[in-house]
Image 1: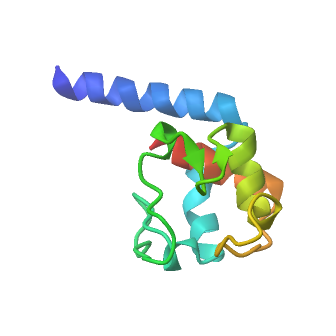
Image 2: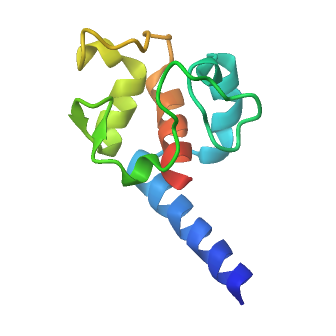
Length: 113
């Protein structure tokens, strides 16, 4: 019974994340690896993503702010991933070249966790 409720909760989080971001969480892990996100961040469910430079990307859906500077909304997260300096000139997060569609998949993944 507990297992069924956990599965249902995960499915619900995934559905909400997809609706919020218009992304596909299943496409995110190879994008995280391609751009080296795990070199700076801990990313749950992504093997080798154990970086200590940036904050851990755990329970992101529960945070009030992103990067300590902007409200945690789907649009803000997508835009932050694409261009963090737009929101914080002093951000250590580089502009990686991630596209908006790729950022949507990453945001969906992070909100679904």
